[in-house]
Image (tube, one colour):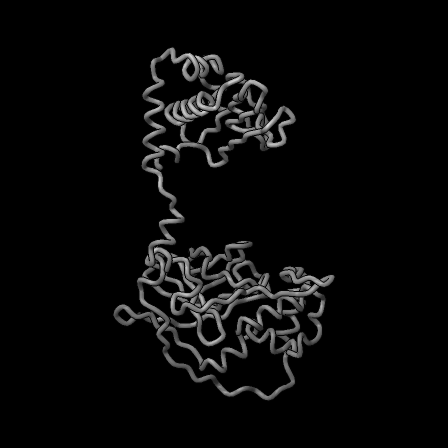
Length: 349
């Protein structure tokens, strides 16, 4: 519906069943309030930082006439207002203000009623639900899969029980999280582990990954983010968990450039990380783990250690437990029988 794209993004409509106006019709772009004799039609109201009461355009309308006037008002607004202008601002700038709008919509002094009604009819006739179209189209639906290389799903939400009810665990407090990472990076009194063996693992096709964007892949019990940085002609891969709040969202992050360094910004709080080294570009203590990527024909391959090795470091369950341990103040000990050093090993690799 390209014509409606000219309307502002906060377009509001409301219908109240009586003058008590529980639906707040007089603070909307279009509002109808039922009366004993029909409907009162109010227009050009808005909330926000500069609220404005809607004004009465016509009173005691029957349902058919009310709908006709609403259609004409909408069509005239989107035909004459600057793109994305609120109806209240449009009304203030419009010569003649509300009286002019009433002349056009109610009295049809410009002879536009039939044209305005036809415009709305075309919109109704050509309307289709974009979400329903995606659901019916397997190719479009595939773009909304959690992982591009499997139909498996993971909730990524740690559930806790409180007062006899289950609820999603709270995000950890940031300062506790930083303290946790300081502990994780402290030298451990254990024998140095042997070097990891790696191999190139196919994670999908080039068409699975959006241009200048990323997508998630599942490798064993681990979620990885793979990025097709088209504008640089390069590919990158990292863990999918953002270490700031332990959310598995980096694959949906925004890729960009910071003084020549390719980066990804977490879509939740815009924490940025180098896609080369994994370090925080805001000089914060947490970092992400990154992996080499190469493309062979249409295949995308990532150099990874065996699943049993990476599962112990980056498994989704570990990230969920890690977030829960911080939220409940248990960052200094073990969580669900898993030692802190195990839970945080992903951040210190």
